[in-house]
Figure 1: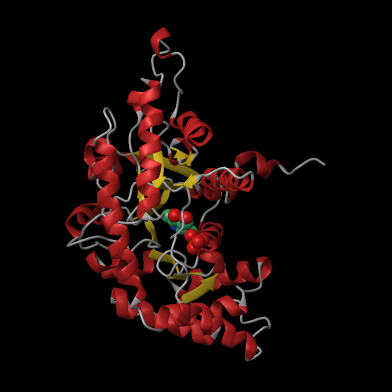
Figure 2 (figure 1 turned 90 degrees about the vertical axis):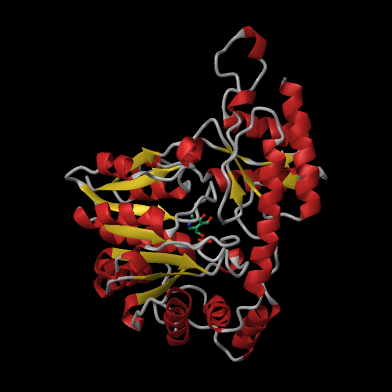
Length: 400
Ligand code: PLP
């Protein structure tokens, strides 16, 4: 059958492809170390699972209101006030099938033909494809490794045109783990305000920040931008609930209503059982969260230290999330010289080499906008990270 032209705009998600390949190798009995996955390795906390079981037993197995149950909307409102100090009413929030679908709905609701949306790179693989599906034009802005991949005010100012409608901010970032504190974010927010841009604030990694680092947020710097800001968040990463598929969004009532109308024609509502679990996650005890974060912090230190001992590898220090994004160009065949002829040409080819020969899954950097990098997830046990990095180092040495 002929597919619609729309499909030619997009490609399968690079991260999901790596996960599929890793699963297939494991099924063949390969001792594979998966450093590709974008999900916490921890199990969902028991109290959250119990809430889901209870909801099923209580018969909460039917359709719910499109934008989520009243209990979940209340929990989202509670969370935003408790963790962020943001005051939203229930008609200004919506529950979705994962943060990914919240972003999809938002882009469909807000953007159309010719609208430019600034996407600072390296960027999460799905933003650009989802924008293209909405008919919008992603305006990818390359940030510099020398600036720790933080967008500078000059880079932002230069990227804005009369057609620019919005900017996506993702801090901490997937794939770099780099985040903005208030001082770093403030000059960007001033430019955003001056140009009246809409902000899509993808906060899915907001809880995963390390040490003394204090995360900045557009709405703490300029609360009056509330009418131009859409928050997207999710229970996936914070509560180790990626499989439950619950995300949420907060913003101006008319946008939330539009997203709800779209959702009503797409999925009707997120799973009633997963919604009950998300109520417990957002409004119940938060004790499990810092335990996971402390563990990620230890691993981040280990990974960066370890990567920096490999000759030629450069790696920015993550402030959060659970990824590192090293520059591996020292191991690529950039110049097509004969000496390097057997080397991979891009981070993607290097990732393919690592999974085939070292049985370590990582993701190539191309789909994040930086082909000379790879993304390594440290959402794996310390023992596996040590084994994985031993294998990576040996495999890189072989490339000479
Ligand atoms: N935003 C970013 C930056 C992500 O990395 C992800 C998942 O990998 C999401 C949003 C969506 O997560 P979910 O749909 O599981 O809530």
